[in-house]
Amino acid sequence: MAKQAKSYDYVIVGAGSAGCVLAARLTENPHVRVLLLEAGGPNTPKESRIPAAFSKLYKTAVDWNYSTEPEPHLNGRQLYWPRGKMLGGSSSINAMIYIRGNALDYDRWESLGNPGWGFADVLPYFKKSENQERGSSAYHGAGGPLNIADLRYVNPLTRAFLSAASELGIPSNPDFNARVQDGAGLNQVTQKNGKRHSAADAYLRPGLHRENLSVLTGAHVTRLLIERGRALGVTYLRNGVMQEARADREVILSGGTINSPQVLLLSGIGPADELARAGVQTLHDLPGVGKNLQDHVMVSTGYLCTKPVSLASAESLPNFLRYFLFKRGPLVSNVAEAGIFLRTTTGLVEPDLQLLFGPAYYVNHGLSPRPEHCFGFGPTLITPESRGEISLRSANALEPPAIRANYLSTEADMRVIVHGVRLSRQLAHSKAFAAYTGDELHPGAHVKSDAEISQFIRNEAETLYHPVGTCKMGSDSMSVVDARLRVRGIERLRVVDASVMPRIIAGNTNAPTIMIAEKAAYMIRQDA
Image 1 (cartoon, rainbow, N blue to C red):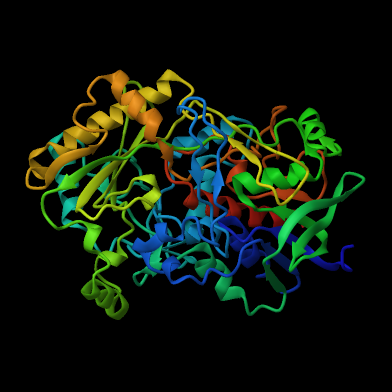
Image 2 (cartoon, rainbow, N blue to C red; image 1 turned 90 degrees about the horizontal axis):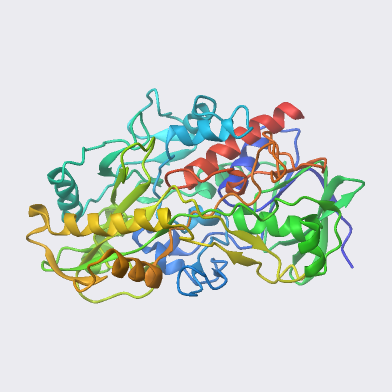
């Protein structure tokens, strides 16, 4: 039996990138009472502060540790999906890359029935969120909560990567988030003084002293409380006790691309036939819930390094001292230090390939290290045609949902990554890398034809951690929320996180998720 419910103006489900922004922005009004519920704990592991240590958080207590169903186009493999389960969500375990995608991505959102979401409309919210250490400009803001920094440490191999790109005629790009996205350059990162700067660090912690903000960790939301088509609150499990929280104004789902649709489905909001199969009574037949799943898929192309200059020795005693005393050295690296955005065929309006570079052996999410010095490329498909879905396995709120990413279901998707593997090889065998390139570890020099490379990709491709789209905004029959992020057919209920993206952006998804929450906070205040 649930405990007596406390009442708030807003109940926010999930203290990830979006939830932290909403909690901070809404409680700027001292007369608004907000409850923020997070299933995980406070993001206290030291590895969440040390940039180069992020992969050590995978498959720990601060990770939801999801896996897909067997992927039909990846030889039936079940892919591991890390997602942050603590304050800050995945911004507390990611590689800290600050990239917005392409301006055309947002104009396309608007054309899909979402007025107010074109690039000119969203740019002010990107700028509002930023404390760009380079200073403010037409494309950047200074003085915002989220610190955006240049890398404090750049490995010699990363310098070789940029030289190799120039050798191949790929132009240099000092800012992927300005007028032009194409080219090769160093990534900017969400770091401050050499430490990770998560959404919790940027937004939530500065406001924790506010009397009108309550934050509960270890609170697993099980369903929405809905009466007569109106959201009244949520039930959540905490310390083994089922409890309720009531919202006088709105309930806001910010659980992310997996958890937000799961809560809707558990509450009887979703495709009626699927709900019936899972043993959930339908309250509102909304066929798009859990559909439209999109993600960026990548494969690691790796080499032995003939010189001892990679991050393999990052955890030496001198480097630990450099980090803890000065916040300098290899431990400040975000591993994916640089990248390239390019178009693999003529006639494309935006890049379809992102090629990441790391001075390290990064295979199996960094969970399978090698003692030797290595470096690697991560060719990534950023404009996928493939679509998947999230669905319930049962009515048990504590059972993870079924994730079907449906990666590489089209030949066009596969062609882009094959192109990326071939480009990786060109870079590795450039003059710039002549002093460093040893044996090819992945896929191996014996893998030569497109068919062989495709088979390698099916055997080894992994997520780049950017799932979006399962509660998409729009005006068609498969839309879950409208352009103000209100759930269709249910009053006083919104979804604010990466799940509302109607189409994945051509770049990393953390910065856009924070932008979505900044814009949502403004709309929520307007509507109130």
